[in-house]
Length: 170
Image 1 (cartoon, rainbow, N blue to C red):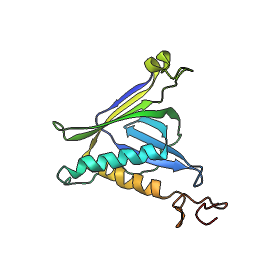
Image 2: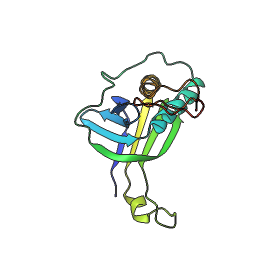
Image 3: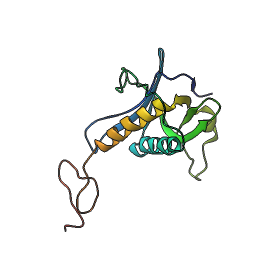
Image 4: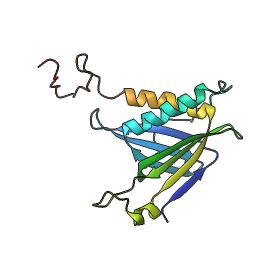
């Protein structure tokens, strides 16, 4: 059986990126007490989680408070538990919490079928966030995602620090 973590009372849920723009590696980190789980992800996955959480919260009353973790920085050492694959998101009305489920990516065989052994052994992280925590996660994630390469004003593709061959300008 792969690793499984359940966080019902999260101290912090954050996104971070390491490396220079265009070469950044993104991480999600969940902390509760002394337990810390770090999952490597794609920028688009982090952005999609924030976008979905915002959409769900737009249908709910604004939270009265906005609890923020002491820091949005990754706690060291950053040891990746697994690489993110499927994401499950939802809302628990009874407890007024947002559900985030992160699952390890699954390898496929040469026929395009999921590797059955890996399906059984993949990692899972399940966490429940208060609306204030979810809002703080969204705001921080949006800043991390936006801190990447600026978009070309002509073709809208990301510009590399070492130059940009713009197809619109050629």
